[in-house]
Image (cartoon, rainbow, N blue to C red; front, side, top):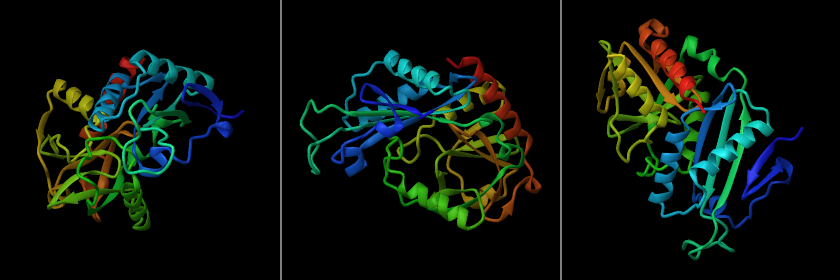
Length: 286
């Protein structure tokens, strides 16, 4: 059975779904997106993703008239039609079809292009990598300086993931002015002396929905948190490291630029935070 996707108000088999070649998302990368995880058929962190979507649209002066309840209805309909128990819902909004290629924004009133689809990922919450940890390399951060907006400009993060793969590792951490900004598609953290250290929010990093919830849960668990930049050398001397994202939740990091952390084994803080995050997220899922 073909996967059912959503394009501009229609539910269609994916083979029948089309977007104009003049769409700004295709021609200019002029689009924003969100990814929500699904566990047990329910959506995680929906409110956080909707809040960030609204912010991204506002920062780019882009409009979309769908309400929170309409977004929720579409998510649930796609999950039901595609029988997704564990997986993700991808959402993208572009500035729409300008009628031709032009650097200027389309005329006011041009409807946005709205696309959503599901990705079934059985075992999403039981990723075996969470038990053994991942290894990362560092590369220069050459992205634009509005990383707080969740746009579809993902070429450099894709290049970073390929660089990590070529090096025999799992992911890459970006470094700018001597400090780690974030991972290729995630927020990053180190643990030193039971203190969780992560870069503070700014235009330099994505304002992670998972990040916000995790720090809240960590604070409630009486864990100490320090929001500041850290270096690769500092990370290599840390007791533990991990990253957060909507689809990986909390993922332990056991090696940074060929230096093993915690003897190359997953540490107790990352393990506990993953347990807390999944437990709390399941309780709040809708």
